[in-house]
Amino acid sequence: MPELPEVEALKDFLTEHLVGRRVARVLPVAVSVLKTYDPPVTAFEGGEVTAVHRHGKFLDLAADSGLHLVTHLARAGWLQWKDRLPSGPPKPGKGPLALRVALETGEGFDLTEAGTQKRLAVYVVRDPQAVEGIARLGPDPLAADFDEDRLAALLRDERRRLKGALRDQSLIAGVGNAYSDEILHAAKMSPFKLADSLTPEEIHRLHEALRSTLVEAVERSRGVAAGRLKAEKKSGLRVHGRTGEPCPVCGDTIREVSFSDSSLQYCPTCQTGGKPLADRRLSRLLK
Ligand SMILES: [Zn+2]
Image (spheres, protein in one colour):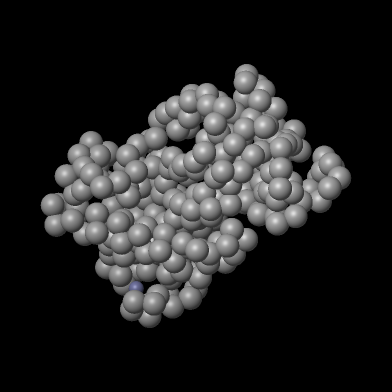
């Protein structure tokens, strides 16, 4: 799933490729991709793209008509740029194509979504704040005023585990399952540590890890073509998705905890004093 760094890179890529160009067609292909009907999706056609913004993990194309085409790529969604779109209309069906945006120049992009769970969402709105997911976003961790005090204030009353708190979009915008693992590894903290239990020194360490992990990932993704971002993201991850591999910091074996719909990865030596965390799924099986 694209998280803050990848969406930031997509924003840069689309700024370069879309701003100043006119949108010819917006073609929803998947049944449930479009989440709004007023204004209609066709109202976005004919407009010139004036800017591309990022709100958390949402991408927002602004047009001179005053309208915004907003998308959230969800877990299995991606954006594929095409220098030349096929001329015929896209066929609705079982393929991954969810929505196509064609420019007057014949270029454009496809929003695609793999798998059977269709969560990719597109909105046409007059104000991005009309998208509920954007309206409830917490502060952006790359914003200049996102300092240690801000992070401390956010976590002060959070009686839950750090892993869940970092992923909560209404608390901090843009961090998902992969980068929360990376941030906690860089901060040398257990994903199960309670968010409201952090000392000032730990807040300092977590803030440093949060900023450096995201800034590094943004730098790495910048200038990478849209089609290569997924591979770029994977290559930069130190623990996420690397169960069984050696930790690049200490060499210990990276472990995982599985949940019903996701899993987290961590290094016991770096993060939990060498102790493996209880894997609830595994312990259930053993009972
Ligand atoms: Zn380690």
